Image (cartoon, rainbow, N blue to C red):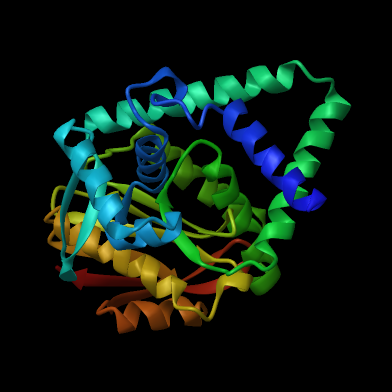
Length: 301
């Protein structure tokens, strides 16, 4: 009983501490459940409603009422998924993204203010304790992979993952990492949010894959920087990322999707072939410290 009472006491303390019982979360116009939906959509970029309900462990009827309220407020929009009209794809409107950014900033400020009152050793102790609680209650990671839009800090992971994995698996030198860094910089500096997208795949809160779709011309999009960490392979993630690109390109009415790959990247080439791409040209070259055969693939949309 003492242990049960201790857990219940902590629950009461923490819900009060973070303001979970207040009708307006972080002094915003939104309840905590509404704020959580805004946060998830802000992090992911887009999400199927049923998947969001499963991830948040929310009754779908309750989630539907939350979403309808956010739609009436002009914060969320939904449309039938292209691949299955029974599935609703949710995204934030411009007003909704602004609300998400405000909530995210307030939350960071509040946590930062709380931590600033603690000495560095106390901060470390608190974080360790929170991680211990999460680890004990989760018991075992379920290895569910979610996709979200990019956010600050992701490009560093994209560049590092490409440099590390291509060196380990194919012997490419740091010039490949420099190439990826240039592609990532161009994407950020010239980002067209209406017609371009980066998807980051996460497993247990850690990035394990990505792919980019960039505008090459008004009618042609380019698939770039597809990568999957070894621990996330064998579950169809690579194909899932490519299919996200194809669906987005069709939604934005591009006429063609193109890509550049190498003849020795067997796993990626198999995915491209299975999703309808065809090789149109091959050129031998020496890059990244090795001899390669570059291949140009395309998919008519």
